[in-house]
Each structure stands twice: as structure tokens, then as C-alpha cells.
Amino acid sequence: MKILRKSAAWLLLFAVIFAMCPAAAGAETDEFIKIGLRYGSSQTTAVVTSDTGSGLIIAEAGDNRISLTDTDLGGVSQVILHLAEGGISVTDSSGRQLAVLSGDGTECIAAAGYASGGTVTFDGKSYRGGMIPYINPSGQMNIINYLSLDDYVRGVVHAEIGQSSHIEALKAQAVAVRSYALTGKGTHSAQGFDMCATTHCEVYSGADGEYASTNQAVDETAGEVIYYEGKPVAAFYFANSGGHTENSEDAWVTPLGYLRGIVDEYSPADEWTVRLTRAQLNQTFASKGLGTVESITIDKINESGYVASVTVNGSRDSVTYTKENIRSALGTSLRSRNFTFDTEGGTLIGGGTSPSQGGTYYGISSLGSGTLGQTVSVLSAGGMTQKTLEGMTALGDGGRTSVFSAASSGTSAASAVMFDDDSDVLIINGRGYGHGVGMSQEGAQQMANLGFTYRQILQYYYTGIEVR
Ligand SMILES: [Zn+2]
Image (tube, rainbow, N blue to C red; front, top):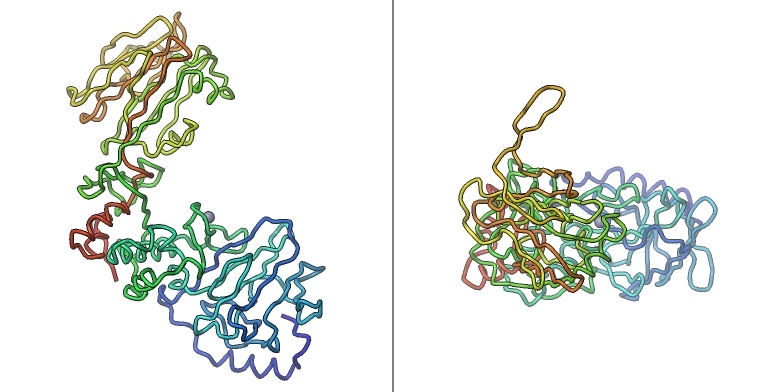
């Protein structure tokens, strides 16, 4: 930081004081976090205003604190940050230059009273902590909010669960947010910050998103984190499980011991229906080169009762989607993967509940559908081998044939819908809302209403964890 109005001796004095300050304790709960507010933008200026009227300071941002080496900007309560040659120029509103910052992410602009909760406004929103102007690898100026982890959690709880929720549900949410943030550090490190402020990471609204109830939840759980085998956990959460949560690897890739699918007795009933005509499906998959959509199959249901694989069969080709990609692929907002198929106008094959173990395999082609045995014989250069039909696609005289099991979960049956006409409707009947991994927020709310504590709620949804 190049200070234009301070002497080198003054700087040296503070450098000595800084060096004498003990480093922040190593505990994770003392950590600070960097939240990206504006990034990848071509805007070359940013305005930061003190909300208290007491003026702004330039401070060192790093080592899990906003340091004591403050540079008072002489009562100036609004500054403009300009992306300039070799750094960031800080001016007051009349254009007078006050300082030049390096833009390397180690300096921030904060309210003089930041330590006692003084906030600054950027882009119409109020924030605790400081604002770091950071020059990213593309030479753009990112604006990053640097603040303590608990202050960050204050700005997330309402945005994620709603401030009018029961206090024990709010506390469970606060601990989950705090834990998730600890494991999410560095998610956006290429842009100079840890987490973004959107659903990609966690929805963060700054100080404007704080309420008495959510701050109470943060204060009453101050510093508390969920641990599994001694490490903070990625405490995923979502709205409603529809009756069962998911294993982490069944939604994404990595199996995590604390993210196991459980029977969820507390998520309230949440049923939904999506209707898509074959014409709409043709449109949705037009770019995939499938030709006309002839059928769509639920190939597999996992042990939690969620759809694991869906195949769309067209006149020219077919495409299979698995896990959470199913929701985005269908081109509509499927609220969850906890769903079954039905139809109006088309033909429903399979479906129903509790079929026998192993189930019946069906083949579908443009010639119609039929049942198959459990295995097929495959002839290759290595000789004749037996293959199970699970997940197989076959190509025959009648065109591409999708093979699926109507009983792969043993609890509910996979199914398929065949279309004859563009007006035939695929009906998707579902339950719940979200990816299904970790804590159900509506379930947490219900548990709190029934008298469970936030610790009991967390223990229920996260397997084998410790809260401390
Ligand atoms: Zn993000």
C-alpha cells in the first residue's frame, strides 16, 4: 500500500506494532472469509461508503483479521476505487487522490468503527468487515468482502432458511452454514476470494440480510462447527426431502460418511407435478440430434428412492442423464429426483411398487416394447459371455433399443413412457425440493416445532457427526 499522506516513519511505527501483535489463534472458528461481490466485470470503478458517517480507513486484510495498521482517511466517508495503471487509485468524491493500493488482495476499505460492527455500503447493500479491491488475472477489479466467519454467517441464515423460522432451526442452519463455509474456502481462489454470494456457494446478503432472530442464532452457536472424523464437514442442505434423503455419491460423485441417505420422518409432504408434451420434449432435446423423441425411460432408481438414470430415446439416437444432471437436462425446473412417470396419451410401461427382486427388464424400440430375461449372451473376439441387462442399450433392426429394469430399487419401480403423438404428455409426479443431500430445512423446521434442539436436528440429518 502506498500511502500518499502519511510519512514513512509513521508507517514504520505501525509496522513494529503489527509485528508485536500475536497472530490470531489457529482455531478455525476465528477465521475470516473472502466473499466475492463483483468479479469478472469490466467496470473500472467502485464506490464504497461508510454507513456510520464516522469515515473510512484503509486497513491490512489478512491473517484472519483486519489489522490494526489502519490508515484513517481523515473523515472521508465515501471513496471511489479506480482501476488504474499498476494499481487501484483511491479518491474522494471530488476526485482528490487519497492513496494507491496494490490490488493484490491484502488491503481493504472499512468503516472506522468496523471492529464494533461498523458497516460500509457497496452497490446499494450494506456489509460488515472491509472491501478488498483485487486485480484478477484478467486485469479486472474484483470487489471482495473480507469479514469474520461469524459475521458472514449472519448474512446467510435468513437468505437460506428465512428469519421467521423456529430458533432451533435457525441455529441448526447457522452451524451448517458456518461448517459449509469452512470447507468451501478457496472455491473461487482463481478470482481472489473463497465463496461467491449466490446459490453456487451460499446466498449471502450482507448486513442487510441480518435479523434479530438470525443474529441470536449465530450468537448462541458462536464458533460452533460440525465435525466428522475430526474435520469440519461440507454441511449440504436443501428444502425438502420428500421422505428420504440421499447419499452424497448418488447426487454427485464423492461418498462422504456424514452424508448418508436416511428415512426422513420430518420433511412435510411436498408433492408436485410437471407436464411436458412430446412436442416440448422434442424442443428441449433438439440440439442433441436425437431426432423425434419416441420414449423416455427411468432406467434406475437408487436405494433412497431417487431416480438415478433417465434415457431419452429418439428416432436417431438416445441420450442418458444420471444423478443431478437429470434435473437440468429435462429443461424444466424439476424440484427433485424423487419422482415417477405417468402419461396422458402415451403408453406407460413398468412402474408400480414393490416388484420382485431382480424385476423385469423391458426393451423399447420403434417397433414397440417387450420383456426380456435378466441376461443376454454377447459374442466377441474373446468368445461368448453373459452380460446383465442393467444399463444396457442395444441397436437392432428396429432401431436403437433402450433396456431398463422395472425393479432395480426393490421399493419403487422404474418405468418408461412411449409417445405416438406430439400432443402426448409426459407427467412427472414428484416429492420434495432440492438435491436431497444433508439437512432438510423444512424437516429441521418441523423438528424444531416438535421440541428438538438444533444439535438433535443436526445429528438426525448428518450421520456420525459431532458439534463443537
Ligand atoms: Zn460460488
